[in-house]
Length: 272
Image: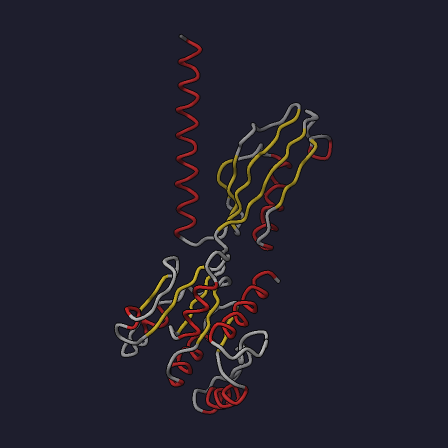
C-alpha cells in the first residue's frame, strides 16, 4: 500500500513538472522567442542530474531548470547558444572527470533542440502565383501568411487550411506593416496586382529586418523601382537588398512553374 502511494505521488509530481514545462515552452512560442530545450537522455554512473532533466536556454543566456549546475551546465549553455544560432539540433555527451571539476566519473548524454525559429513567409498578392506558392509550401518548415488588399478576394480562391490569410486595407497603410512579424526569420515576397502597392510595400520592408525580401518582376522593373527609391523616396540604398527577379530562373512560364521556381529559392535560402 505504501509503495503504491509513493508511485502515485511520483506520477503526480511528474505530471505537474510536465505541465510546467509545456506552459513555459508555450509562453516562449507565443512570444516568438528563440530558445533551446536541453534534455538529459542518458545518465551512466554517478551524475549530478537525472534522466529526463530539462533546461531552457534563451539567446541572452537566461536559463530555466537545470541539468546539474557547475562547469557541466556552463558547457551545455554554450552548446545551446550554438544550437540557437545555427538552428540545428545538437546531440552531445560529457564524461564527468577533472575537466569538469567533478570526480563522480559518470557520463551524461544530452539532446539540445532549438525552437521557435521556423521561417515565416509574408506573401503580398493572392493571385495565381501567390496561391500556388502558398500551397506548395505546405508541409515545409515555412509558415505562410497570404496577404491581399482586394475586398472579398479570399472568397474567390482556394488555399490550404494551414495557410493564414490576411485582408489589409490600402486606405490605412499601417495595416501593411502590422501584418508582418519582422525579424531574422521573416521572409517577405511582393507580387500584388498593383505596381504602386508593390513599391510602397518594398519601401516599407527595406526599413525593417527581413531574411529575404523579394519582388516579382523583370530586370526592367528592378531598374525602375531602384530609380524611384533613390530619386523620389530618398532611400539611398535603393533596391540593393531586394531580390528581383525572384526564383532560381528555371524559365517556366505557367503560374505553377514560376511558383516552383520561387519556392525552390526560398528553401535554398532557408537551408543554406
